[in-house]
Amino acid sequence: MTQAAPTVPASAPAQRRRVEHVDTDASGVVHFSRYASMLETAGLEELERRGAGLDVLSLQGLDLRVRELRVSYRAAARFQDWLLLVPAVEHVGPASLKLGVKLYREGSGPEPLLLAFGSLDMAVVNRENGVPACLPPSLSSALKQAP
Image (cartoon, rainbow, N blue to C red; front, side, top):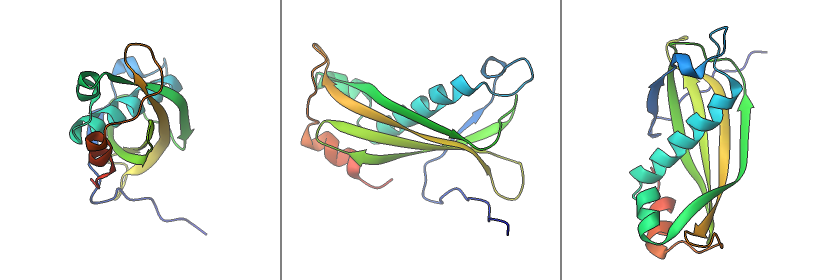
C-alpha cells in the first residue's frame, strides 16, 4: 500500500531557498548539520513575520535560548535543489515557545517532496542574566495568531 505524498498546506507561509555549495558534503548531498541552521533560520523568520522577531524581543529585554532541537530526515537534498521551508509556531507558553519547520524539495514531482522536519523548543530569557522570563501579552498574542 502506497502513501500519498504530503502536500504543503495552502495557508502555510513557505520560504523558498536554493541549496548552495556550502550546504553540501563532497558528494553534493546536504550535510545533516545544515538542516539545523535551515530550521532555525526559517523559524526565526516566522517570528519576524509575526512581529515578534529577535529585535522586538531585544527591545523588551528578552532573548531566546534553544532548549531542544529535533530533526527527522526522510530524503536527501542535493546541490542546487530548490527547497520550501514551511515554519509554524506550534506552542507558546508563558516563558517558552516551540517552532516547527517542514522542509520540502520543489520540482521532484507533482507535489513537493517532504525531505525533513523538525522543531526548536526555545526558552524565553532575560537578555542580561539569562534567567527565564515571561513573554509580554502583546508578543504572546502575536505568536498565537494563525498564519
